[in-house]
Length: 232
Image 1 (tube, rainbow, N blue to C red):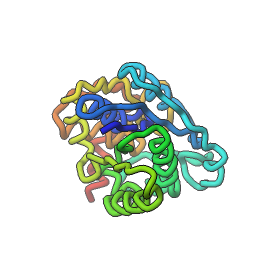
Image 2: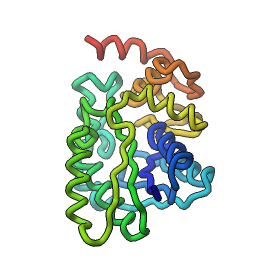
Image 3: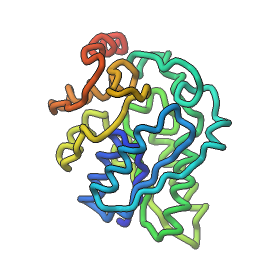
């Protein structure tokens, strides 16, 4: 499949880009600036595209993002520490973000003659993010089939949608993903904080996968306590 990968620069989407580059035909990477508190991860997406020798485009949807208020990822709200299973993490939801990005990506894919749009949503996202769940992915594919009927036939490729993040680490290692060249942390410091939901999930995933984690964390041990709390 000639595929465009939505790539934030995080572990999941960069691993997906490397997977597609090996298993399909990677046409390019697509990133979005929706007014997130920091855009550090987009530089990692650009580096991934350069590494894989494909085009990288960042689409500016900040005008839309300004209306999606109330999230710790876009507003001046504290990013909570802890595990995604904790109720406090709901403040990191940006309403309808994936639906908006995917709709734009499908339009770009149709214009470029692509066969598929790839997204790295995964099973660990299901608890907190409604637009990362299998039901959403299936419904979005159906909607796009109608939206592009007679013009283009584009698949929504979401190979990780029913898998835990640890399986992404395993798959990424299989496809030689340079994990140190990915960025997950919501806080955007010089190093991963080790305490926010995505840092905790990242650290736990490497542990469960049995793969060495090359990431530098400001607090490398907090994840154990957070995982215990999240399991209660």
